[in-house]
Image (cartoon, rainbow, N blue to C red; front, side, top):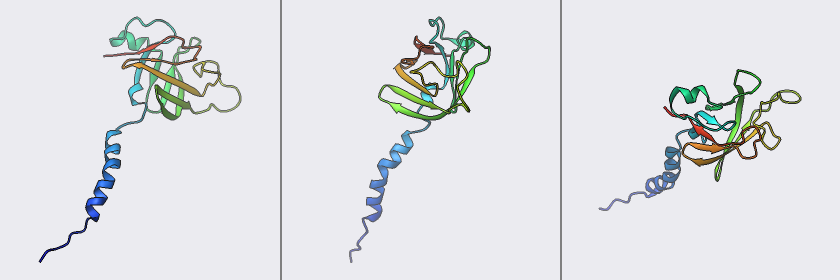
Length: 145
């Protein structure tokens, strides 16, 4: 006597496979490749290796915060990340708006007049630019080592 088997488990597994594969390939946040210290942007990049680079980092990116140097203070300016969107050539950070009135000078990146937006164009594995950002006119390179 032949026994009929239901195709439902097989079909369900095939339909779920693409979603499962997509979930498995995505391991971290979309801006994970930006994590770490970056030098340049304000001045030409001289050294990208070791402690010298990290000592001269102008931008630091973490999971929740983007920090940048300030010419008026020794402390980094910190901005919390609200959202990150993938663009065809990089990323777009939307930063949490600062409370009340006008932002403190140098809290943004001088980009398109919006201190709560930072666009990043990826030029290679270890180089990015912030287009239309007057305070970061040059390319930035990743600190290594």
